[in-house]
Length: 80
Image (cartoon, rainbow, N blue to C red; front, side):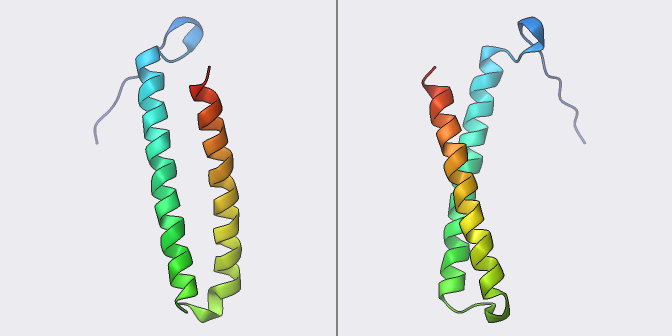
């Protein structure tokens, strides 16, 4: 494993470069989760895993809500 060091700005907060990098990583993660959610929805609609359909549909809805909240926070953070 490789180790990483995190340098902090004043008051123990990440530096501006680290925040930008974290925002890009978070945005990429949200987009990947959106793609995974779409894939899951396509699988459910296609009749895959019929015995789990209700649970997977509930999971898909919850994931959608979490992704919406994450997107809202990302947009708010970008407008500061």
